[in-house]
Length: 336
Image (cartoon, rainbow, N blue to C red):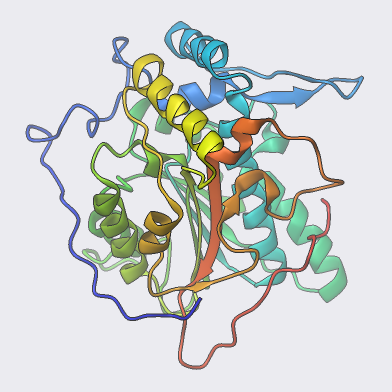
């Protein structure tokens, strides 16, 4: 992909009184499906016989019931959500181990795992140990979990460890200007958690993009506003629910979108290949390009994913700089 120069429009922001229902954080509202808890309701882990089993700690009845309704209508619907999270884990480990990223910003971080060894910061630390053993380098990347939902943030704060470079920050990824002002600490004398001058930053934009209730043009402006605040050479790893080109897959994907709106959080939109390209305009697209999240350099041999695995796209891009050569991921990163 050839980098292009774009000037992003400022995305719409709202005061709490003006915000549409989908913009307002769910919190403890039991009449709504909390997105973070819905994603948690479909988590799995391997048991002693290496079979996948539910691995649920936080999910409430609302979200657990919604997950069952989704799976009843779309077989293996939970795989879509799990594939997005797994991609972000692999991408973060790769960026820290191979691209010397020093700050990982996880926007819309979601809930921690029942086993903290499966949390993103633990995966990153294991990746660093492997890398440091080869390079004799002891530097650690900071991991900044950014969350807009107060209930989810409360759980994230239980895994935050400032001494270990793990932070939990209350900010709204749907308001990029405010979020980056918080992380850069532009309004105060003390330095922020991220230094645009010194840190090599990677931004992870996960499931929350798909559940923005505006148009995909609005979401493209949102992503572009995030990119505008990143320094040259920074990375963006992103997922979005996807509308495949193949007519049969597209019909099933649209049914999945309909199920999300009627049985899930009430929002949830698919994006076409062209719409995702608009979101990342002006960046350098890294191999393998825009594709299913499960297929991005998977750990181990290829699996047999369900059809719905094609309903979540993933992409890794870099904001180009005048003096940087664009890296390419290895065919398959080291397993950790």
